Length: 465
Image 1 (cartoon, rainbow, N blue to C red):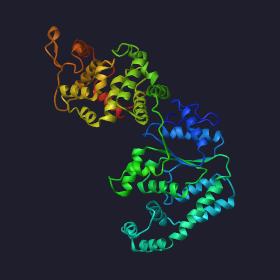
Image 2: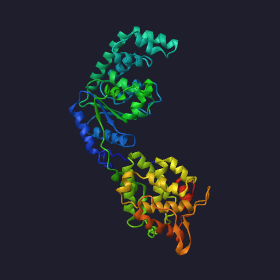
Image 3: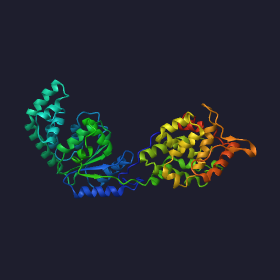
Image 4: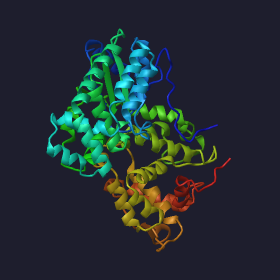
């Protein structure tokens, strides 16, 4: 049975990167060597955009670290975001490792209990500013209820005692993890997806409570998104999020962008699209020459020049694979046109919607299509855009009338003239005209109009058995 979700890559215990199609094991080796050589404890960030495969890499690296003898924890902050106390969540993960003396971990938990949920942010703020004064108190309590204010004042009066408890906590934590031969690696993923308050508290707690020799924290983040969360927490766009994060992150690392063509080829195989694209029924179409390679080149070129992240590429190609499977195994599919329409749907919804309701006149459609194509592709590409343009225009003109019966020709027989010209290259106008004339005489087998393809994309057409 097929799944509507892309399955997670299987991570083998003995060879965690065996199914990695992006060649990333070497980066795991580099990061592991860094931890081995700097074992006193630090915070490492793996900073990449959403959709670039951070989580998959991190999960593979976790297994890799385990194989190298490192005790490690994978903590999905977003899944723990429902709780109110990140301190308890982090300690719970450490406790689950069953390292060291059980008495020590219980003592750690007991010490941590002295820092109430309400008190932790206040103490952290005081530590960060290195003092508690009237200004700090005023700013810290201005939005609190009277009951919380009284609790806060009590915490201030008790600050010195709590400071001593904090020092005792860190000392005991250090002793606890030094029972290990190698640093404890604590991986925190999805922090940038958490609500701003939880994200900031996790960062502050890591820095001020768990920053001890023997623990290496790895933050798997999209730094830009986490910066937005920080600004949201403090309610100001003027917060320098990069400077703020430098207080917490000792070493920043970014996974090199993978080769997009390898990822796309992997998705073609994984989704089974090659079976549909190589369909022999399509051998009489304009795009049939070396069609599998041609379609792959087209998809690869578009994704590269639209700066698409891996997640976007996967979503678009996954949707396309579903659409292709809605056709019968022997029917025409026009994957090139479907691909262009899907790109528009994901990347320029306005154009796509105007096409779906047939709001554009033919010349407006040609202009919109031309403007949608990245500038680099218009001059440095082997893609026959005039051919796609002709097919798109013909199918658009055959769709049910929504406000104008657009005819693409004038005259008849030998005197027939195509009204519109290719937007891409005047030298291709003859081919463009010939294609439109051929489509007028012969139609496109199995594809009545553009509405048929739009309905396939919107999944409103029944699947053909």
